Length: 168
Image 1: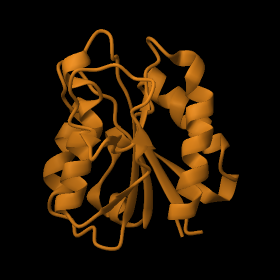
Image 2: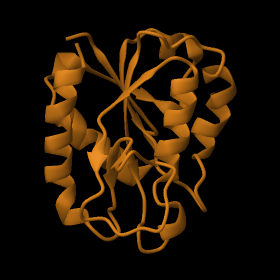
Image 3: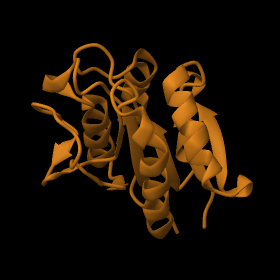
Image 4: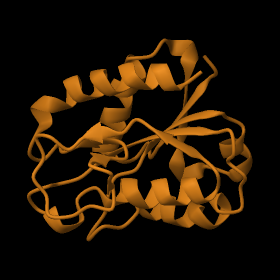
């Protein structure tokens, strides 16, 4: 398996904790942790497989650090690159734009030629709408630490097991 970039904000506590749990499911030499807040296009393009931590902020927005990287990202050719996205959201507090960050990022990556893997079931979630919802599934791993923290570990374990089949 080619080395995987695990990209997330090192300063976002809940996303960092989820990223640490995801990394623990891989062997040490399979994952390279990269801080999304200092990411450059050159560093980004140097990988073939990616796991991106993309929480949803406010009313369905990307965090500032991802939003600021988008113009550079949109100039990259991502053909042949495989992406999995995980994100945190609050289905009770923000049911009308639940985990929109995942959907926003997936759309950008696909426009640049990237392949999205790691879709997950919506079973067990209650929400009104989400840009991360497509063809009956979420476009990545959805974690709701506010309302379903007890499910996080098993959701991560199952998701990573699937990702290992998609990352070659």
